[in-house]
Amino acid sequence: MSIVWERIHQGTRYQVRRAGGSLRLYTNGVLHSQYNATRPLTGSVWDLLTLPAFLLAPGAVQRVLVLGIGGGAVIQQLRHFVQPQHMVAVELNAVHLSVARRFFGVRGKGVRLVGADAVQWLQAYRGEPFDLLVDDLFGDSDGEPVRAVVADRRWSTLMLRHLSPHGILVVNFPDRQELESSALLCQPRIRARFASVFRLSTAQNDNAVGVFCRAHATARQLRERLKRTPGLDPRRGRLRYRIRTLPG
Image 1 (cartoon, rainbow, N blue to C red):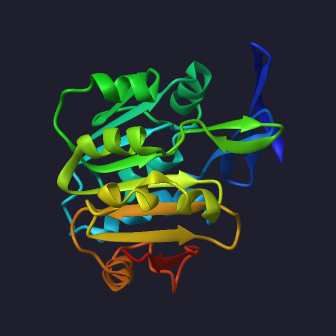
Image 2: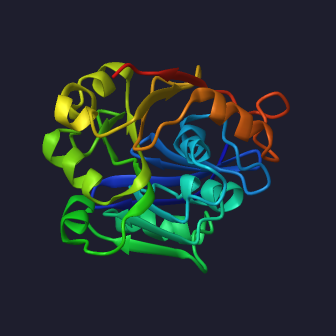
């Protein structure tokens, strides 16, 4: 693995490293993004943030909001496999935004990068709702990734406010316990607003990705749509995931 670029800004060390054909963004030694333009699947957690789009019918995901972009791997995967009409990505870290544009190619038509605090931005937002809302807000503590915003009742309700009637909310958690203790699952009034809920995981890391669907969906629907999508059939590529339906 070679270092392509490095910077220390306000006491934080940023590195872009190359591993084979992949670029990786590290912040204080914590991996925040990995992407290979010729092989969009990462075999890791970023795939899990993209897969829920296939719980909706083809063409249903037109408006996407990504909160916390790192280097922008999820944005690039969604552009490659889903082609939403409009994507907004909100990121507080100006260095991450610069790296996403410069090294990961996150720019161009249909993508708007916003430098802002995600909570404040969503509180002030008054536009159209989103078909897919991805919460990947992470920081680091002692070299370990930690969520930057607690998934409590207030934050969960705020995200729901900007989700379309058929929309899907995707939230990345560092482990299963944090997902299970979140307001999205523990608050009955919030949980009742979703017709189907899933947990996505991989053997490669401990992350648990919560998938909260306003409309009814099934794991079988996901598997069948992935089989029909070039590059996403788990039988023929590097896509490895586990999905579990969570009870209501």
